[in-house]
Length: 503
Image 1 (tube, one colour):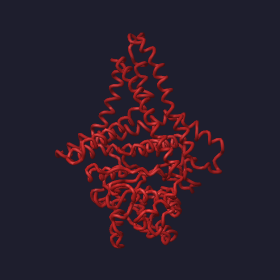
Image 2 (tube, helix red, strand yellow):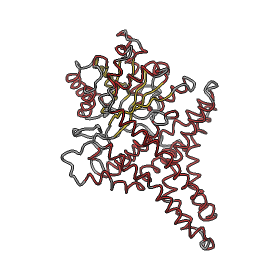
Image 3 (cartoon, one colour):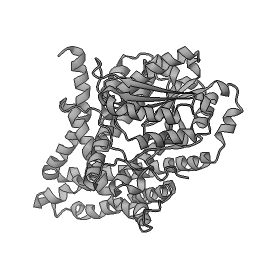
Image 4 (tube, helix red, strand yellow):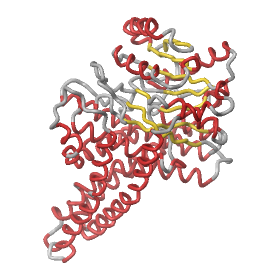
């Protein structure tokens, strides 16, 4: 193993080691030093309570801004600006084996966009591995939508190219290079092109592209920014199992928290950026799973810390995982959460890149490394420490310790701390009700109570099974350098969506 690979292996081991050290010490201390463990759990629960209280205002700020921005006429505001007519939007839609109706829903939402269609280039990117099933769908899309936009470009990503893994990152890299060639052929200025990398089930708000254009034309150094919308999972929310809904709302609330303090955030899922930035960083890396966050980090490193996220408080809506039966849907949810947790692969990239970048400000390095490390660590440990491991001292401690006053009083203390922390659950239930799409006619009225209230009773279970465990799974795989994750495509619905956007 050469020195460079040895360095990377060391960085890959750190996140998982921190998690397993916490879990193992929790077991050992619960028996041999139960008082230490009790003090630790009290402090940790207090920290988590303060964290909930700290983050709630950011969620509400984002929610208020979201509701306010939904009412704005972004197209009129953008049209009033100089250079509006020069801005083009390229929408990348990488596809693997999705049903034709999913593609149609996505393109229909683009057609409903207020933005001029003669300034929108749609790129449908298939995979050679699924070429036989892709071409009939691509031809159907061409027939139905080919003349409705400035251009509809179809690409095929060759299989088994050197230095690649199969997945979205390698596909959009191929698509991006083909877009650059086409933009140059058409004589369009690269600096006037905004690229949106969307999951193919993305349904966009009608004003999304107008809002991005307005921000692009008004912020300082627009090429040094990505543009992140509010991600909802409303396309098939009413038909999804309750644990899936809770997990997806949790993702939305996490993102809304990040948007209101965007100085340290990275991009997630469907978002937009400039073609100039993509050219500067040579497009997406082709051998990773977390291409949505990595492309932001590529910009951050290339511009020596002078790169940021501009919040877009308008929604893009996507599918929750759908895979037939209830158990299959939960299995698909676990795999999706594990894939998202594989964002831990950014840690070694960041440490290596930051350590070699002498121009990036030290505080920028510390800020992003801390958020990455703390986020991955708490994702894997908080649910277990709060709901399970925090009880271990009272189960395992020798009898000699059980007469101590702190042993008798701590369970009541922890119970009250958890009651106070429930404010986060109540807030989530209230806010989620305001983000729901309209109830479809085929869904009974009583299910409204389940979706808005009772599903949140599953939060502790969902938090552990579809939060901590897939995060530990991902970090352990990277730590051991075994079973490294490839890109698994989340199953999509195979029936029309009754409507996705929240009002």
